[in-house]
Length: 261
Image (cartoon, rainbow, N blue to C red; front, top):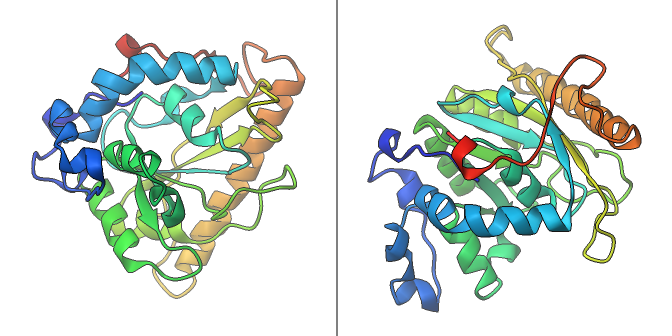
């Protein structure tokens, strides 16, 4: 599901130094993919995970080409169900290094595997400077960091109030935010409903003057766009996944490994 960017990524970069603990790691299993999350996805997870995700959530995406082919970026998406991360990976042409709650990575085996794939923890409810520094280093190296600005899954079916983490990473890292709207509400293993993902155009903050209000202004811009894209995703599902959205954005199916950058 992730890009072939190994040639553009420093071998001693942050992407290759994300600490993972656990029995399988200590036994040296990550050496099978050179301890590189990018290689893990290309060689192991893309052929295995993509068909499983498609079976669990028969879905379509719109605007997949809006995620820049190269360079660092923050992918900011609303969060409605457990299928959100796999769906974003299914349709992304790039590697996504997700920020996830620390408790998830503490689950035996599961957390270890997520760490291999580049997922790194954030301590919720506090200013986690370590997570912020790691995210900024990743985008500066040219990677895509995935963030759910709401901070947690929303139970109402509508995007919730958004925090400033995604915007902080973008501003400090000097990159754009790619907004994304997902309609995955009430998806579950028992209710494998069809879902939609809509990628938006990258948002730059170069036009916002520096000052105490810059982050809040940038966050408001991103939040409005995510809510708009979520609405477009919900309308696409209701309309039976038309070939184009009303604004002309084309529909895409899941990307095959050969189609990824």
